[in-house]
Amino acid sequence: YPNYTTMKKMFLLFVALLLVVAVDDAYAGKPKPLTSSITWEIQEDGTLVIAGRGDMPNFTRESKKPWSKKAQKIKAIRIEDGITKVGDYAFCEPKGSRKNDKYYYCDEFQTVSIGSGVKHIGRYAFWLNTSSFNSLSIPIVHLGSGVKFIDDGAFGPIDCLFISDLSAWCRINFASSYSNPLKSVNNIYVNGK
Image (cartoon, rainbow, N blue to C red; front, top):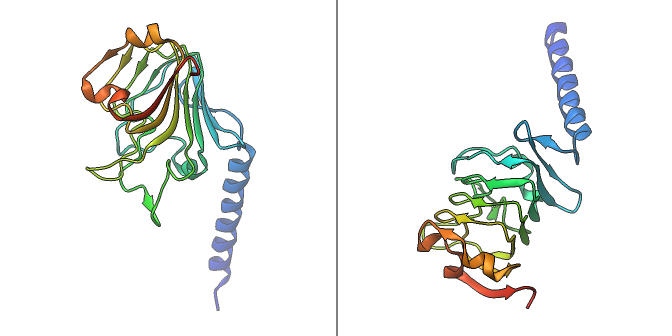
């Protein structure tokens, strides 16, 4: 039989776990800080919203993003107009993120919407790589008219690319041919057509 000290430790551990769950639930659906001027939140419909002002931080492929623990709930990503740069590897599938043949950012992933304030899309920001030879495709990408530079590998394959302003698209600088989403897009819509 466990002694009094062991039972006391188990009870305190149980109470601590309850507090962690209560604190996590208290902040569910509320914006959380990414930087001092940028927040992130996963809304009830599964949309990961990045809002605020300024550049998102850069990540590495292996780094845990603040939303990593809830990544399976993400069905869409919306970058608001106040964001000026999408950081490197911001939404890239992390190494080892395969779990029971499901990919954390991919199974229900439907849309990426990039606001008109975004000027720079970082390296491998939206690359959903499943192996060195193939990638999962992003079903729909809405690209805002403010983008000026797209870095290497920013996007993997895209099913439908929506370009809101063709003249703005023509002014985008691409780091290389691998940074141009036209290299691997199935359908392109300009001004909704």
